[in-house]
Image 1 (tube, one colour):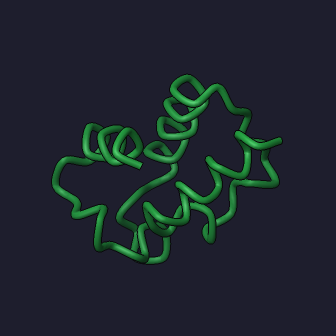
Image 2: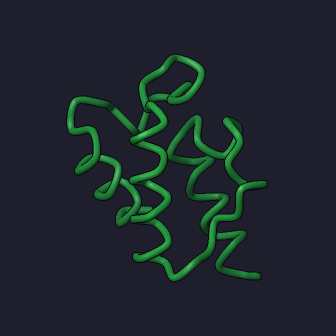
Length: 75
């Protein structure tokens, strides 16, 4: 989770990712941020994030993103 938070803070240093729960719903992250994030997560965690995973529920909070990463690591 710490590595994820570092990736997120590098992407958008102005956001409190530990407490924000509506990153997509509130427009905190835009589509370019998501593409960059997916690329960084894929590289860092050696996972493949398929289009079916790219739904707001998986990206609305750091906890949701971390849950997706853990699930994909197990596959």
